[in-house]
Amino acid sequence: MKRRSGKWLAVAAASVIAGLAVTPARADVVVQIDKSSQRMAVSVDGTTRYNWPVSTGRDGYGTPSGTFHPQSMVRRYFSRKYYNAPMPHAIFFYYGFAIHGTNDISRLGGPASHGCVRLHPSNAATLFSLVEHSGARNTRIEISN
Image 1 (cartoon, rainbow, N blue to C red):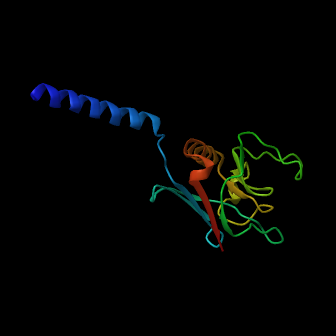
Image 2: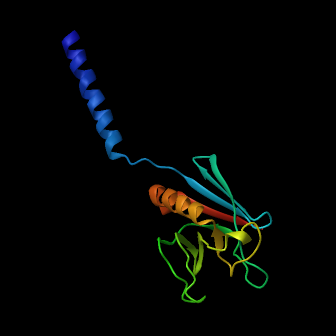
Image 3: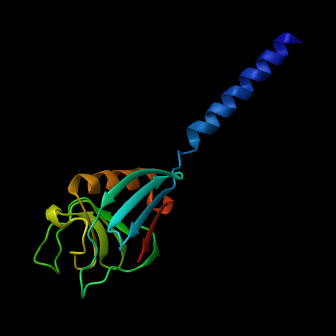
């Protein structure tokens, strides 16, 4: 009887391990952007990991409010609309609006963009990698006034 139960235990353990190997790790990423405070909080599985200053749309150039998901991601992008301006680590979430890095870091913390959400380049790279790893379907972008 001992021999049989040991074999059963080994088969059960092997099937559990095989099931874990096939199931990809899933992390829910929530990006919360508060236009009034010009801050971005990034949570993974309900735990806040990052809190960064951002720049959203200045007067005349609103950043849309609402809940979005990444539509596309481009590591190196240049705006055709705004004089080939660099938009590193761009995460497009609504038509031409994106979260991306900026060289104009002195203006972070206040409205300064044409509607996109600007981040420090290193923070944009961190967010890009996190979303890339977790997947666009597992990422939610919430923008509030």
